[in-house]
Length: 71
Image (cartoon, rainbow, N blue to C red; front, side, top):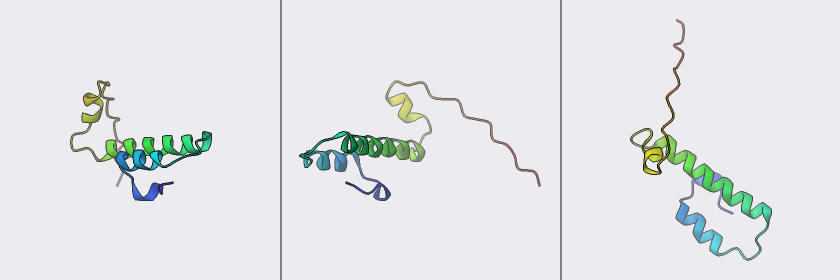
């Protein structure tokens, strides 16, 4: 299985999925976690915040107000 620390591309995940002969719930769950993690990382690093949501037809969530630290 691809290490979560190496940030695989979705193409890497598909390539590895094609090599799996013995699918079971644990393998499926690992691939789902990896794909979710990839999407989460993509969202955190997108150039224009909210653009991934817009591209896929989702509502862009409102930004939370951030608390200002007291000096």
